[in-house]
Image (cartoon, rainbow, N blue to C red):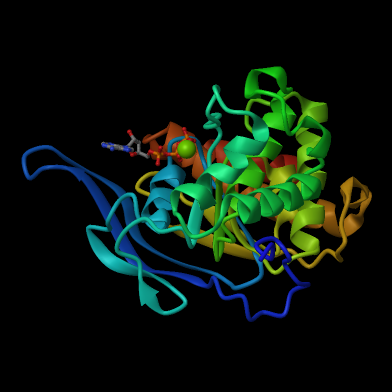
Length: 294
Ligand SMILES: Nc1ncnc2c1ncn2[C@@H]1O[C@H](COP(=O)(O)OP(=O)(O)OP(=O)(O)O)[C@@H](O)[C@H]1O
Ligand SMILES: [Mg+2]
């Protein structure tokens, strides 16, 4: 049954709603501890594209690790479709920035590996499913190549295929396009948009790029500086299907300005504990935006 990748257009029934409810995360022990996530609440809705943006080092990866179940919250709870997340599972898969393909396996074998080791499917079915996802990410012709024979963008697409074949209820993506050159990054964003817009896949995506965040998101959540929490939620009401043409629209410019202002306050706070300096920098930013108007 090669049905693993026949993701029907969004019906909202695929599930995947993630609720982060008043979560705290502390690393260390009682003698030396560090609060990284502080009373954080947010919702990633089923079938929607939720993007988290926040200052460098604020705790974004920690939050992804908590949703993935690699880490447990110190306080609060995280649920997936109402059930508490207590550990890793194939219903939540993470695509990281670092390449995680097995270098000694072909692209096809890399993609088939998950279903095969779970022993849920025959080799023939795993192969059929793998071929279907490889077609979705445009890698059919490259199935017999080894990872090092692929460009950076192709490697990311192979990783995406490797996650998608498991039909996760939620796809967690932690800055998956960081480090790619600008052109490849843009192509990957368009690939991901097409994939999302023709599926019911729930996605939670972390980035530090505002343009990328607005291009992709239905819901854009700005994270505060460390210890992090959800500071503001923006509904990105730009029509789909989207492409980079949105960057020329007025609504995009308005959204970007609102998000930037919120982010800027966080970034300034992260750089300075001196309230006077912080206030001056926020004021300077406000003056630039308003042209000096009160
Ligand atoms: N396993 C750990 N043990 C102790 N501290 C940790 C651990 N993992 C993360 N931290 C700390 O938690 C804070 C947040 O780290 P995290 O990687 O979640 O931030 P981030 O927003 O993803 O950063 P970046 O923008 O660099 O990707 C950092 O101060 C980091 O040192
Ligand atoms: Mg990170």
